[in-house]
Image (tube, rainbow, N blue to C red; front, side):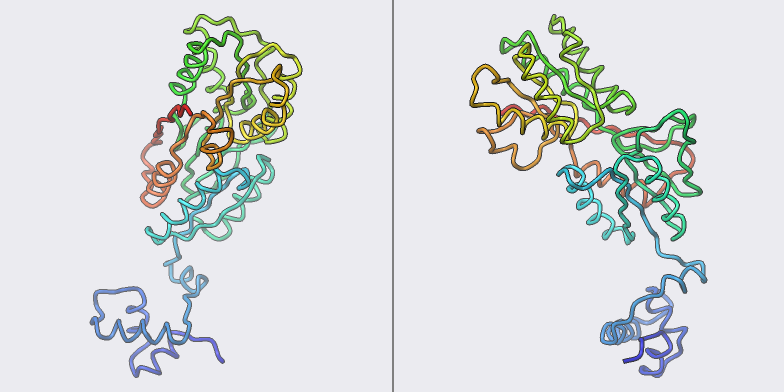
Length: 324
């Protein structure tokens, strides 16, 4: 079967190809009966718009890129799912790239999005190093998610205001008798890592705790690193509670604690970060700092659908301490 085109639809219906084109673009110049007939015939033939042809006419589809470190952890997976649903409502084409928090992979992803003429990109910035130039984003509208990159002009950003929840978590642990609280968070190369550690220190100070630097572990965020750092804290035996400041770090640390529960000497009170579905039932419920995933995704799409290039808008959504 030959490929359906605007001209073949026009021939079948006995109308001009310009009328078909206008009907497919939902032009008000086309009568409803004609438009319905065109859409019905296009559906019957399996007609699909040609992106290349649209670009040649200056009517390219609106493409939105999403750059995430991975979609292994539930937060990023849920964010991508909610964002995809919101893009459908705004007639945006979503293209997802995974960077593995690598600056070179991030730049390659940005280059590919520019090749397909993406109008906007929502990205979790990869850690930056002093010897690498800032990412080149061309004319794309860039919206930063969770973290902010280090450059002179701030970009629009959708952030999490988790400082109050982290301080509340430290206060809760202190009020329940814990005076030796360990912390595992992302490295200082990430803006979110620095902010969360500052919140932990502020919470400890407000609770009158003297936190040993040996109980503070920061690293590149990953499940394996969270697990390794928790095992080291357990082995040291100096802490009675552990607070995490990262999604994958939290899951990794929790896996180490669950395996060590058979030994009462290694039992730690635990407050995680993020709220994957299994936190509600594992070990009778895991206390955690919940991040508003859906709200973040919806706002990111709103910024992408109607970008305001006159200024960088940074919006923060509050996290919530969930005690179980």
